[in-house]
Image 1 (spheres, one colour):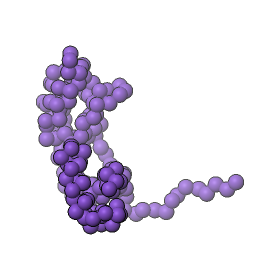
Image 2: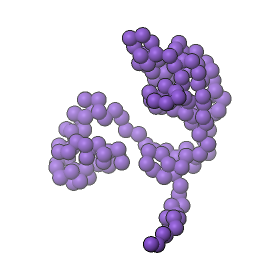
Image 3: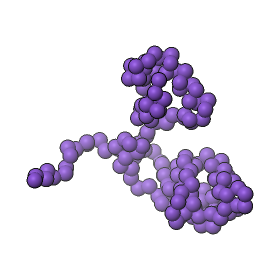
Length: 162
């Protein structure tokens, strides 16, 4: 079985059944289950998530991306700082980046005030963090490859003729 193809199919839609995956991969559902289990044990599959368009709900929700500048620690680099940040349940994703900031921290809260409190009381005081910049999400147009727009309009690009 092609494990890379399995991973790509799961990335596209993790809710697809083992039977449907087996048809696409030309193998048995049992082989799919065994491969998925092995990929989980190897730490390659780390979880499954639903893509949710929170804008469609009448629900308080506030997402933010926070850039974090930090000073690396001797012999640990950025790993200890990242470990401290990742422990917070508000943090949905955390990346070490190149560029003007060391980390991108994605968080989900209920209100802007909740996001602000997280930054002020939890994130900024972490030893090694030198500055933060918070960007509040105003609207999601595409998440994990899925468009959030219901009225999937026809391609609006102009036809260019030679």
